[in-house]
Image (cartoon, rainbow, N blue to C red; front, top):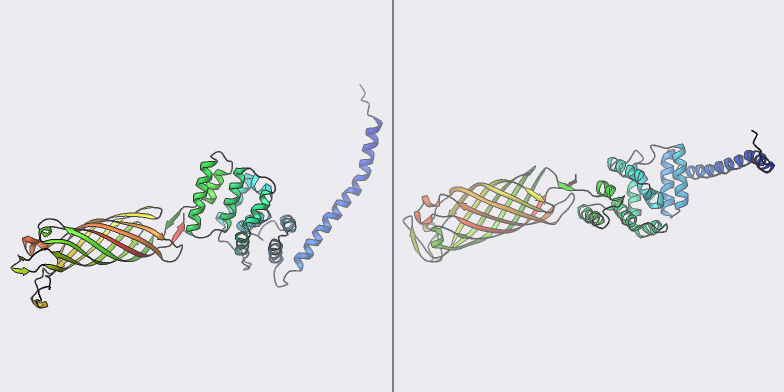
Amino acid sequence: MTTHVPPRFLLATAVALLLLPALSCRLHAQFSSDSLDIERAIAAERSDLSYAGRARMLLLRRLRTDDVGEARRLLGFMDRYRPAGWLTATERLAAETLIGDSLLIRDTARMEGLLAAARVTERQHLSYHDDLQASLRDLLRGRADAVTARFLAWEPTVGERWFINLLINHLHVRGLRGQEELNSRVDEFARRFPDAPLLPIARQYIRKDYAEVDFGAAFSAGYSLGTFDGSLGEYFDSYHGPVLAGELYLYRITIAGSLNFGVADAVRDFEAGGERWENGESPFLNAALCAGYEFRFGRLAITPLAGLAMQSARGSDSAGIDEPDLPRTRDRVGLEVGALVGYRILPSDRGTHIDLRVRVGRTWTGLSTYAPEFSGALWYLQFAFALVQRPYDAR
């Protein structure tokens, strides 16, 4: 059986074969011309830089002038001739985001690969010392609206729009409070688009949990209010006064010391320990050294505490009694249990945080060895502000 080939088909094939070499030469010439233009542009950069260093500067220059077409061509050229070692993964991702091609978002496997590599090499700056990574981050911060508009020009889906916004912020946001806001937006993305193909990538690489470093210290100043139980409560109506405290952090263990310069309000005159105590405000020192384990929930921390305490009281001088003649219990040692609640109102990544503190506790010591009338314990509530030196790190 013979197959008949139409003469028209044979003629078209012959013409194509004749034109193919010419077409190939023309494409090669065009490609060579484009490559030559890029080579010349790279060579025109600073002469003291290496070839890759010049290409980095040219890329930054083109992105700063919003010449995204030429920036795209430069990336393609360097991928062909210098595919590795001229950009970190973070720099590459930032540059492609500034260019705003749709393929960056819609090729989810490549996007995940870029984000994964950027996480590993986030602090890598190669050896060029040109601050390209910081410059690209600043460009994204300053031109976030324009970059977003560039992506929106190719009509992404609503879910893709959310991810674009997350990606742009991820690349330029720095600091705990900025990351907290970004984490909240990722959580909102999950609630609105639970089936979005880009959601797992956002959760894995854009959302970052932060935790405090293992070692730190704090100092706080505040005020304490309290009341007494037992027979102490029959003689002293209330307790109040300023308090100074310090803390050391070792992993989740907290060692807390406090010194409360308070006064106990005696409601009437009374006899105790063979001495006469006048009514009025009796100086009452309450100190403690405790340890506990911290349970942290974001900015909120709750630390149950237990440890040693010391109390000392002396009589009121409201009756004009000379200091040496005032009754006093001397220092008495005992125990304290309580809890420390802290909320970080001004967090800082590396510097000093400011916390609002509330501490509750019960202190009972050997005051009863001075006199049975001093049997009982102090219940107190403290309010304070704390300066905390314990930086945050991403986990």
